Length: 463
Image 1 (cartoon, rainbow, N blue to C red):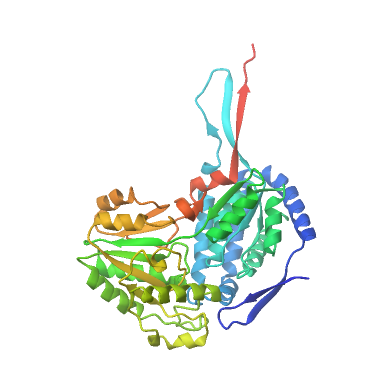
Image 2: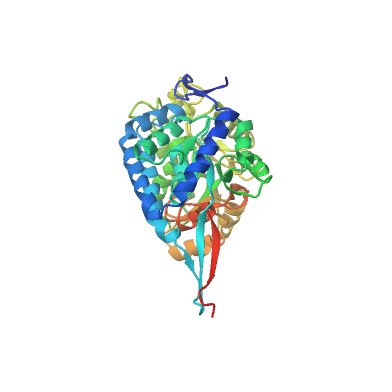
């Protein structure tokens, strides 16, 4: 019997031990999923929606347990984990609102003697493989719209946050969702691949590393099924000469260091116009020094440990390599004695005198470090923002909306923000370019990858 052990970053203890599912378990789960989906598909969208509404209520009622478990599993402060519950509900409600219009039949121009339309058919069984850093938010992006579209869902969550699967299952059970429509599996890498290869699975949604995305796509390519991939990011911000500096500093510090920098769309590199550079850096550093690193179970803590030792290693190595190459660190780690709590407790770091020869400015950090570069012009900032293999989000900080749109039209990214960052709006598409992946979730367009078009061409006059 293979056991999955969840090592908590809070104190590096074993927080949970779970039995990995076997090939026989997988077969039973998928058979049940196929059977449940056939009946679910026959319901109208209006008949499916009440189950999701009841799920939202049940999920919200469990927010205290969800929040504490989440802190133990991945280290986010207990003062902040309830925000993930709220965000999950916001996205679920957004996709509920969009469902009927997004899934309605597509009508074409009238033609005498014919009825013609395109129906959006559910795919069947949707396999969801989310990441650990925002485990509920990432998973809900696919789970709710997949169910509303008439699919069944099998969830394989990250080995760092597997208990999320059980909390989702609890809420769906309390909502009365028909048995088999939502199920979960604890799987090895080998069995995850085996699920993707199974003919009963019709779509895979994966959030994780670029390497993981390549493996998922390689396995899925053995079959003709759809794959949604949200992978790496190195999201930039450009601070213009006419930005509201106090507002910009507050938001970019938060965008860089919230969740200990472990955000898919967190700020990882900042370009600042030379006319405001010194003032920006001074304010950014002073605000960063105010973070309270510590045990995430303490309510006064607003920065906890990074989730994994491997993640801590990446950040430490990038900082050391950048300093060796000429970067200047502006935060003295001694200001944060809480780093002695454990290996994963990293002080936030701000680096200047950086450039794109350094990995800290080009490779995903996914931790509490950010590099700041001085630029002379919009053109230089644009070139640097696009000098990346990734393209999830990017932001500009300016009081000039026309400038924001002009530059935004040239930035290679999935989402372009003005005076905002590190946020997903459920009414806007969530997508990326280049090595950030492929596919689209959320918004009305998010339903497209979870359905297939089926054309109806009906000749009604035969005389």
